[in-house]
Length: 172
Figure 1 (cartoon, helix red, strand yellow):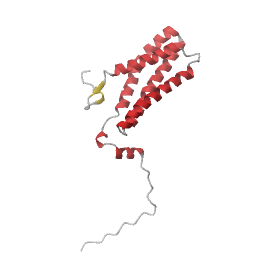
Figure 2: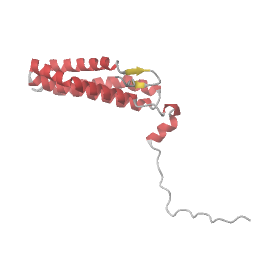
Figure 3: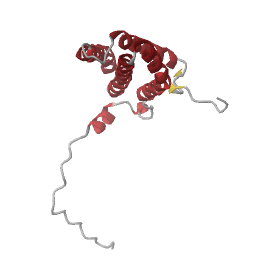
Figure 4: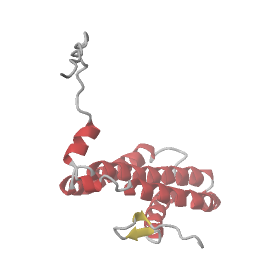
């Protein structure tokens, strides 16, 4: 005869009702094979900002030599706008990638439009300020945006084995 074990008594307090979190919902609907994919968008954006910070002193010095203090402040404002644009794009695309290719495509296209409108708004707000010169602001935005995108192509890996940044070799 086997011993009879006492039945555990139910708890006096009801278990707290927990609403499903966004992460749990995403994990339930997303592909399990994608669970180990690194946050490629954030890696690329941070790397572009890091490279942008390397050339920042040169850009500030050139704008300061040509346009004075208004050129330096315009250049600095332009750099902040470009860096914020890259980081915002990475955040939006990283969020959208969890929900599938349709949401990713819509976010990429719609997000670009929204980010360009925000850029125009950020310029329109300060265009009449005494510390802004439009020529260095526009040149900084154009040169750094395109320059960093082209510079980053050297560091991007297009392989599925290493998505995002290329792995660094020991000799480099």
